[in-house]
Length: 255
Length: 253
Image 1 (cartoon, helix red, strand yellow):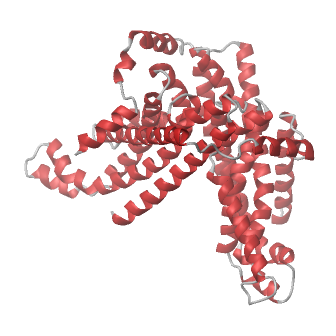
Image 2 (tube, one colour; image 1 turned 120 degrees about the vertical axis):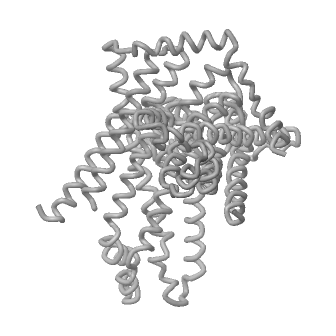
Image 3 (spheres, chains in turn red, blue; image 1 turned 180 degrees about the vertical axis):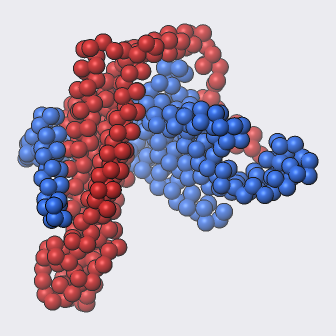
């Protein structure tokens, strides 16, 4: 039974461990891995690497900022905590429900396509470089943040906003005075966490040409320059580690 | 400093960092969202519709989807085996030194993203699904190895200890005393990872590792946008299908 399932899998995945031992592949790999040591440390490459590292951080930061801009109005519309029609039947009930459903569908649509796919598409539209990466993070994380923001707004104490709405205040006022003070810290904390994920995503998106460390890594791999790959990988691991620590420290400061 | 002043300071700092980022990338946010670039994007997007739906192409899509599934399933299976093999020393079964060393290896495997492994494996195994399988297996071994090790460490020691005390060799004590206790957890972790790996397998093809991703990459390079649109729809459908299937399976287990 197991063999019956496994066999087609092996065929479909072109599972041929033999190719790993193929002399030609083996030679390429040996030369490539052999070149990992020593890692590339030439001053001009280090300068390039430093620029790419800052670029990766900037892509994550700018992308997260755009994601916030997309997410805030979406969450404001989607969140049930600000629903006037939940208080009781009124004239705008059907229209309100329709707008809410449309916004919810939009958050789902934005985040259902992975950021790498967005990046690949946007690289074709905007050309190689960081702009595609920034927008890809902005779009995907905009959808994610929109959903999570709405959930955070609903999970807190919604009574102040509710009383404001019932007393006749507008949605925006009810949001700013009734919901935001209680939820601001959690909203900020989650946004910082997403930034941390954005750093990792920015590197991965670089592999399809969206700038930063990933693009540098892709070029080094394609040129079979093992030394450069080794240095870039090390910097990448260090960057992710630092972003993790920074995000944890910032969130602790918020708590 | 009052809490309010701290809040303002943080807001100003955040704005400064965001502004500096845009400046560094020389991206003008206004230019990104003006009417001209909006029209350009809309123009580009309109080329994707209607999606290609000829029977011959749909057959090709089906083949790509099955290949993606095979890559994810086989990658996860390999990772389960490797993860378990690494989890034994990582749970401290063979001493503290091997525990530390293997944990370091697991951390490394896990920290390198799947797509980076993919780009490297394409060099080792050539273009195609086998490279994708290896890439998934390497990254997932790191993840599952750690999870398995934690499951083993948290497993109640009594059954295995009782078997050892009764004189059974340590291998058998593990097989009959510890393994059955942690097995449901290992399977649950693996199923969950498989679900994520299906998602990952669809994009691994961007670096040449087979499946739907590779198809999308080709179609976009050949400027065949309607075909690319079909591939994207197939990717979404595949992920939704697997999510539903795995939710169903989880309820059954």
